[in-house]
Image (cartoon, rainbow, N blue to C red; front, top):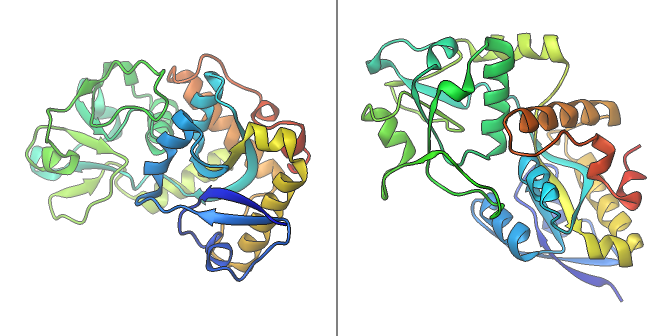
Length: 284
């Protein structure tokens, strides 16, 4: 009889075949739980182990691991993208370049979002921005309850993009908006992304998949089957993220380094530490 697994996966090209039911298994039955947006489910997964299988922002996973949360990473990428387009400023306040951010008020949904960590890493390491000089304004707490957030919280009821439009913020990270007054902080996004990839050779991972540690310990065959299903679903879609083991390792090493640099985790994990014996064997 198939094991029923409570599962959180967003609607992505790589999950489409799996969620539609066109891919089936005699070993597992994925019981999909819907959150909109999907990242609303990350907090219950981290805090309550609400799912057996869950999509997970990679920085949330790194932070959860640093606090001993009982989850194990699968080498399955469900969302990856360049992040340069997800930083905006208000042209009515004057032209703003990355290096101009020192001393400015910058809004971000939560200081711990993966997009935010990627963009801050780019700003610090590629543009020489002093992240500590910025006044960070946040709107939500971290998925990981134990994290001590020292950022300034936006006034209750305020929203991030309207605050930018009203001049209450100088820039925002993690947002895209179609508005004539808002422009990307990186002036030529496509060129910036191309140049960044030429320098680093890394595609930036946002979300991967985790399983409960107990599931991996007691039912390794089930975990291997979940990975097989994810891989099969991804292979069906031409739009799914494609990562060789080396490419995945390079991206993980970079986001680990950025997260440690920004003091979201106490030390830089080795990539192999993110997996257990079962899931590490799948990372080939």
